Image (cartoon, rainbow, N blue to C red; front, side, top):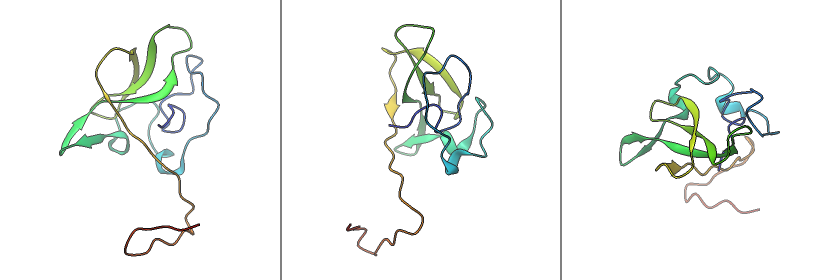
Length: 101
């Protein structure tokens, strides 16, 4: 799962996160809606959770809404997750999509 900092949601003191912004998200406007953060399920934009808890509010987790805007919500709210993997740019991916080490 991605962290709030990796997707450039916020650098505020309310984030418990020591990761860095991923290159893909570096041009996003902090906390504003951004298409790069929009995740779709069956063609429809849906909200999704990050792995970043709120520093100041128990039971709240950073979350991306269907417009790509970040906020924190109570963890029982329904939303998906957006798994990700970072692959070096020089990695060759063959047509069969099988990457071997």
